[in-house]
Amino acid sequence: MKVLGERRTLRKLRYLISVFNAFAARVGKTSLIMSLVSEEFPEEVPPRAEEITIPADVTPERVPTHIVDYSGKDYTIPLFRWIPLINERTDKDSRLPLILVGNKSDLVEYSSMETILPIMNQYTEIETCVECSAKNLKNISELFYYAQKAVLHPTGPLYCPEEKEMKPACIKALTRIFRISDQDNDGTLNDAELNFFQRICFNTPLAPQALEDVKNVVRKNLSDGVADNGLTLKGFLFLHTLFIQRGRHETTWTVLRRFGYDDDLELTPEYLFPPLKIPPDCTTELNHHAYLFLQSIFDKHDLDRDCALSPDELKDLFKVFPYMPWGPDVNNTVCTNERGWITYQGFLSQWTLTTYLDVQRCLEYLGYLGYSILAEQESQASAITVTRDKKIDLQKKQTQRNVFRCNVVGMKGCGKSGVLQALLGRNLIRQRQIRAEHKSYYAINTVYVYGQEKYLLLHDVSDSEFLTDAETICDAVCLVYDVSNPKSFEYCARIFKQHFMDSRIPCLVVAAKSDLHEVRQEYSISPAEFCKKHKMPPPQAFTCNTVDVPSKDIFVKLTTMAMYPCVLLHVTQADLKSSTFWLRASFGATVFAVLGFAMYKALLKQR
Image 1 (spheres, helix red, strand yellow):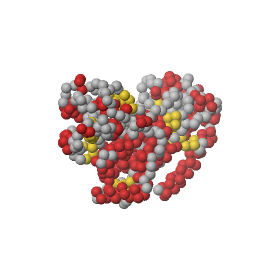
Image 2: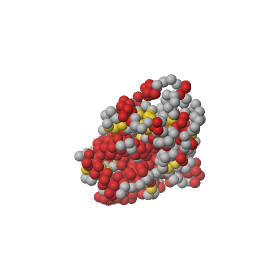
Image 3: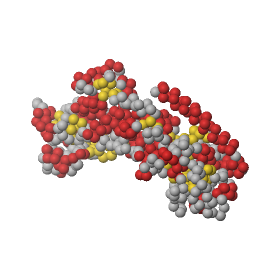
Image 4: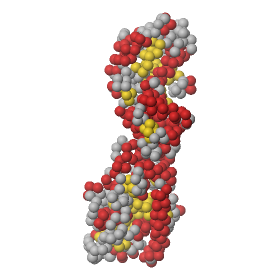
């Protein structure tokens, strides 16, 4: 038997199955097929039956089945030579499931099972053995049902009969499923979690007595299978071992496929990468439901309730991944606490960054976390908002976006890294603790503009002579020069003229290291005159060499410029110099910072 084709969605399984009747001559292969189709024994049997396809709606498993007959005249191979022959032509780890059929049972008055059992023990790829009679129509439908079942719910990938235990790949997959289903992360599945699991996998809850019966079976066979009246991982694995041993493979396969696994116990591309159409000039963001889901994931693993994930807590969170997705650079990309652990805000920021820069990776990561299952959505694509074309934003002079990208440009050593780390609230002392190999070229954090919380994403682009096209795609540009280096501003001026002077991308010049002695820049005009000439805000003095966190004024200004680029085109130079103009934008930051801290403390008390 072999699978000729397969189409799978998250809710439906469809297989095209070929029944390979390659046995010795005159054993009744053709009669079996014709008896199945006509529901009566054929008086005249042709050398070979025509190929037929049984429609899905008349089969128990609701899958189309393609049956192919082979004439015994074409082969002179003895009956039990077929099994080694098939095995020789398939990989050991992907053996084809076999059904051993004893036909013409009407001609004998005894069962041949005792003779067959040693063969079944010798060849573990034999899923089952069926005695039947084409003449009496005995077990004909059952034969083809077992054939379907052997393909749809094979034993091979799940269980090792010699060892009488599940295979490592199956244990690994079921362990991930258990961890996803353990929504409070207490190491057991309580009644509510078991009922949710039952409902999403089998579309029906378990009655309270049925739940108790399941746990009693586990208690009877396993001393540590139930703890605090909840099913432990050992108990969960034991139940599935029991299902397989009792021939209920379909139960385990239903669970595996619901959680995205294919026949090789790998997560399918369809599950990890659902289709998501992203038109040109559009960006991708997480929606409200996705943030709620990620908040629940964070809370699940923040065991000490300090609103930060320790290295062990983060490692525990990513146990449902096949690899560790975040490296040490992430800790220098988002906000951390004083111990360098990623905070709640930093956690959401990193997900926001991934969604914006690489949405396919975000879909993959959400798939590992079980988003579509726990959120009861068709796929994790429902977690993504695709923003409208930026040209429409410019036409309407307003935006619906929540994430804005600002490319930070400047020559090497001008202080770009300092600007990125300042967005995360780190002064020069904290920045000096960052190891060179853990440096990040991105930083992301929330900024409040006119009372609205937005994400500002800073990208430290290369300091080469020319920027690539990708390095010029952004919502705003931060041109950084070092006030103590006389050659620093010339680079910013040149890059501006080459790439941004004729674009509609707003630019802000930042005079970094303003705590140092300012020298005259070796350029035809001063930075202030340059900004005035090109209708930009005046250079913004900035330093990271502070006792407390660096000022966030430039980040409010950059976010405001990114949100309202058209407005700035019509603002006078006097307005751009006016502190009142920028104060209106930044006022919301102070108010919402206070309110945010109060809400943060309230949520912490609730948790």
